[in-house]
Image (cartoon, rainbow, N blue to C red; front, side, top):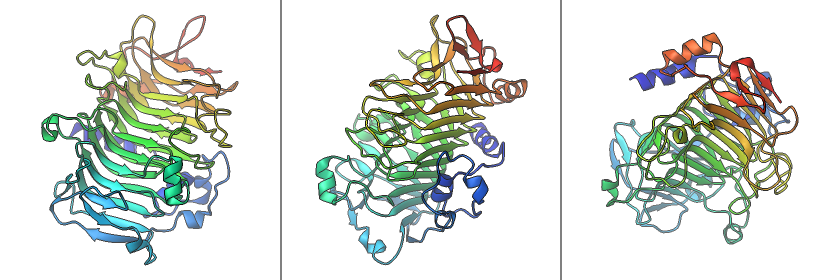
Length: 440
């Protein structure tokens, strides 16, 4: 009950501030996006008109009654599941397909395929939506949207990308079961995709028993990802991860967005995972990033994993083979676009004597700068010997403003966060509390 109350408070804390990507991915929402608000956060002009972006999706609906339902295969390789073809609805003028359940407690998708994937969807020019149901991961993963973008895969499709390829989860619960349900194995991922745009709203994800991540995306189709009120209840390694590099993806174009609004992250990084941990991990995404009113509950050691290892809330980096966020050039420019954390709260630690990062924006390899900018706006960041690590940004690219105010401290304490120590920014002279503000 408390978790759901926190999600509601986070969602209602402030009025929504829409963006062009939000307009495009929230095409079935009730309220049109005002043009002025849609342009407020866009660093470059949108490439579609507001009218087109706000149009409602015309989806072919497949009803799923209460009870258990088998694996779903759309244009995928033969895996023993019933095979559906996207041409069945696309050829009739639909934008895609909707699998409509009768509620998360009533309708359940369970894995029956021999490859251990509950929902398998090959890349195509259409939308696939799941609504009002629960997805139970198979022994390999819960969902697979798209496939690795190798030259062989591109040749088979006849094109590198399908710009209209989009996965949508609305009022969905997705879960990884204990190893006993898989003969002692642990699935790798819960929601997994290659070169697919992702929209989630009112979703619960529990990948605590997985080896790796709750959501793992390799690149996008064209727009990016928009997550609204998603509760990351736990993950084997990382909660939400995006990695776009030349070994597995192609560049999807400029003005991609990753927007997470009103999301909650808990209990990431379990002792059985070898992949490290983090709440949000963005590695050379080639996208602009907005995290707004998200809460990160890090800390608390677990077995061999220390508290500070479980306190990495937001990790942003460029990689050796990242696509530039503006031009698509490989390994030069910026691995990520503008990165903004607005009215987010995070707690973690304690860190070691040499401090540990609760938020980070830096280079992991190569010569590319980590992002065009990294900005903390009115954020609450707490943790003894926890720091915000910033490097490999252009001059003036980092700013922390309005953080750890008395009002934010009061809110944090009301939501179960230990505010006895502020996170800091380390300089050669001293540890600067975030409440002092900083620009570099």
